[in-house]
Image (cartoon, rainbow, N blue to C red; front, side, top):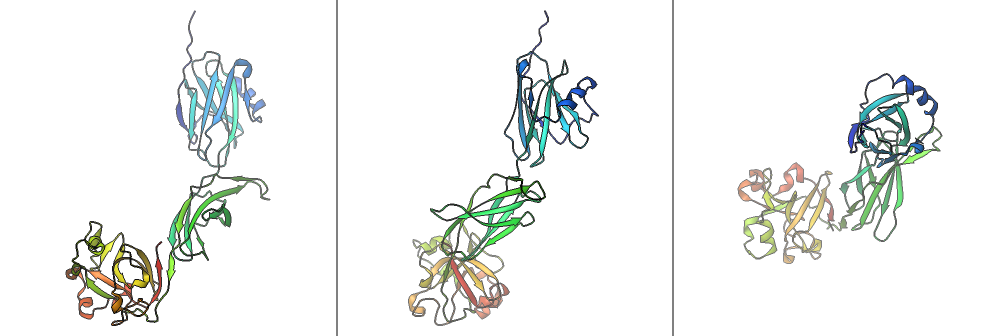
Length: 364
């Protein structure tokens, strides 16, 4: 007696690239036509099981098993446009991962015994809506700008927000054309967490909808808006960083650390994209604290506290230096500083730093 072996394993196939055949064998097409409108068919009498699992927006897994011995299986995919079944592939494996599927789309696959052309089962499934992605684009003292990506065309994007100890609450719904959203009128120095979902309406009246799973949560803390003195702060003075010589001080360690470098354009020392500055003690005394400073021109810069203005040199509230009416003092490498700044002693003449100081916000 000849022995017939049944193979098992897994295979990955692109759903967007089926075999280009006009139809399956004539002797089974009629059976296809009869049952093509059914959602799920399993020939349980023959001990065949057919499952669909791990359904995502662009992939799914088919698993099938037959108690009857067989050499290989023929997989077919229903062609909705031509209203027929097309041969997809033939395989000895009993697992098939479909990739390249379209999001929020109905699919129908069938399995045949490739040797006998016996129809073993049909499964129908619908892929998920694309899972959106939310990111933090910009933060200040009263607003947070969110970035929105991986949004399915035509979907509505629902945005949810929560604070510590609270539940998520929907704050907005925007169209799929939006790639960002700014959450305004927020409290300062407060942590906000966001997640988004997309909703797709299948009917024109919008009654039948499909929701995506939630995006990964993203959090940001708003900045602490701080007070401003009566002076404009148009003058931005400087000090040589080499004048800080106390090796055990936090000022020296920051200004001479491996993370600290000199901006070749301005000669100002920088850490993590922040300009090294000294501020009055009103704004804080912890070296390494970061701030965002906005000028009347609309330009905003990030700075890091590398030193503190001496209280004896500042006003009664310790917000600015009395002598030059300066709020911000940059720390520089003298040999790399522009000559015009060395001559005039004021970084405010450079376009990037020009204008009055209109806002100082602390990163908390």
